[in-house]
Image (cartoon, rainbow over all chains, first blue to last red; front, side, top):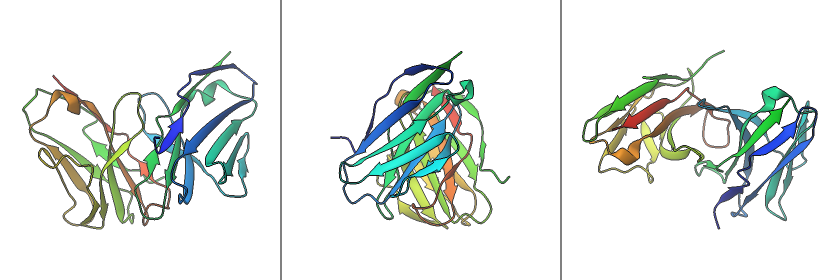
Amino acid sequence: RKEVEQDPGPFNVPEGATVAFNCTYSNSASQSFFWYRQDCRKEPKLLMSVYSSGNEDGRFTAQLNRASQYISLLIRDSKLSDSATYLCVVNKGNTPLVFGKGTRLSVIA
Amino acid sequence: EAEVAQSPRYKITEKSQAVAFWCDPISGHATLYWYRQILGQGPELLVQFQDESVVDDSQLPKDRFSAERLKGVDSTLKIQPAELGDSAMYLCASSLVGQGYEQYFGPGTRLTVT
């Protein structure tokens, strides 16, 4: 089982739709969780950290389920500008961050 | 807003040639990372520095890759000799201290080996 697994997509959704991505991780001792966004041919940028209690930032909500070892990202009211690849990132203590392959989202007008 | 600088942005080289990439992290960031990202994959760590010391280079192909951060500030990643399979995006990132802190990525160097 890979350390971090994501559905590669693509997810093609109309503007205004709600879309959710899941990511599973294999190391139960993982401590830190992040979602990064990467536009085509650009560098990854931190979208949000994922806290145990879940967190929300505008239209974006991240949740962590330690028992099932998955994290999720929910995007409400999708915008064209949300089109990108979303990378799930996990780490344990001082070990290197492990990136998933990413889930590609295309928001269509 | 402070940014991670990388150069060159693009590099085309023939196999067996040597290439070098440069990175200048955000001022004050003690931790510097070099990643390789193949198209359709997530970034994979090549080497991590804490100040001038290598913390993790377990995934660095040491027969052809080398990295240094002599003064604990900017860093150079070298490949010699380059192989066709080295074609990828090479990303540099920095963070304040350690892995738990968010990492800021530079724009990357896209390497094509012909």
